[in-house]
Length: 111
Image 1 (cartoon, rainbow, N blue to C red):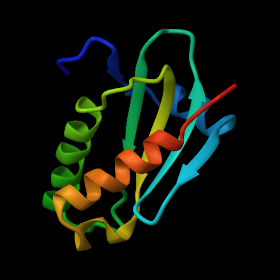
Image 2 (cartoon, rainbow, N blue to C red; image 1 turned 90 degrees about the vertical axis):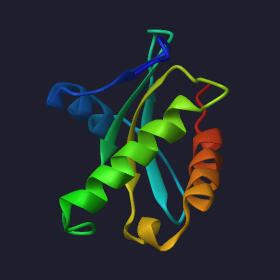
Image 3 (cartoon, rainbow, N blue to C red; image 1 turned 45 degrees about the vertical axis):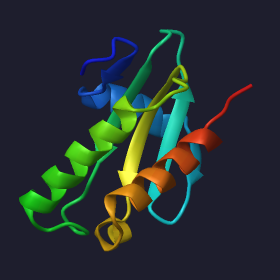
Image 4 (cartoon, one colour; image 1 turned 90 degrees about the horizontal axis):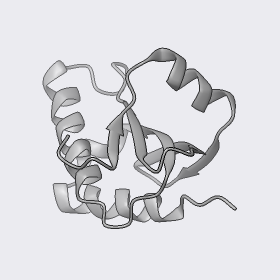
């Protein structure tokens, strides 16, 4: 990751914390489960399941594109989030998916 304000969640304990107490923001392609953090960073994890995307090639393509979308975010929010990719992701072009991701990311807010 190039941006120091963005980190990747890798530990299952971090995923479990988000799943335990999260707010959901979604649209037709993405679901974001998010909780605020005090780290002044955006931390994210990706959920691309085998049921919807049976080939490793498809899953890796999606994860690569998602990392690009997240790197290109202009307004970084201080949250921990899990991005769940829905099954109709591959039916759209890259730019359309990027637009849908930005749309759902902009919905993420906490008081």
